[in-house]
Image (cartoon, rainbow, N blue to C red; front, side, top):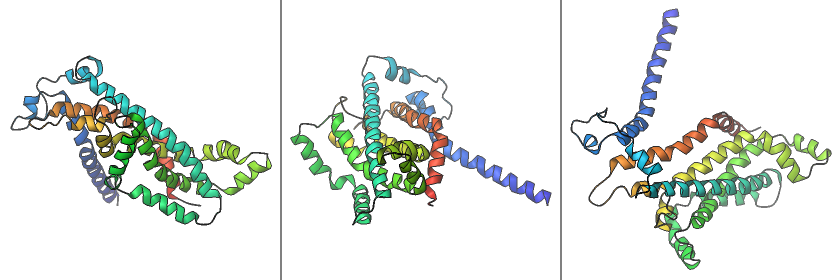
Length: 281
């Protein structure tokens, strides 16, 4: 019996190691590519460990005043857009989700499905009228255009997620808060939000990631470093006649740092939010 248990644990350990290697291999190779010389990246056979690793690309992006400094400005654009979109979506989406969760009115379910349908529309379906609208408003190549667009797209998603979390909170707690003299807004801020904090943080992270990594809309609506975001900048390292694999890898590593940092800091709330949103009642 004991041998069978040990064998089972050994199998689990082996498959766990294999799974970890599969998951960690792409980011590890991305990092190796960012510090390797271009000749080593193109060498045949492939060299897994660079002979002369260098962090010059990171220094050029983060500290130089040359052409690489544009990527630093673009990183600022992505952070600016993602933060504003996250704040707008979480505030508006939470208030709307609370209303859909607690209020009763005709057609509520139909409105929710319309919101979900609007979120499921592919960007190619509305990018042309969107471009014409922002062109008429003289908002092309601005961060404001991206903020408005992403907020409009992601708010329905936030409403659906937050409504699920609010549905898990007993109404008796709100009744007790009303007896103590809380207004509906006070109940939301003092009772509902603290209890649904894991769900709020999980939703916040998802909204941040979706706005941080969006490519197609940013590609169409922006054209200069004044408003470009990181996905567009990384794609531009691939030219018509050459591809700078090293800079693409460096940009990919830098682009991954903020989401990884946020996930690491708020991992407890993220796991709790995913679990609480999966169970209703």
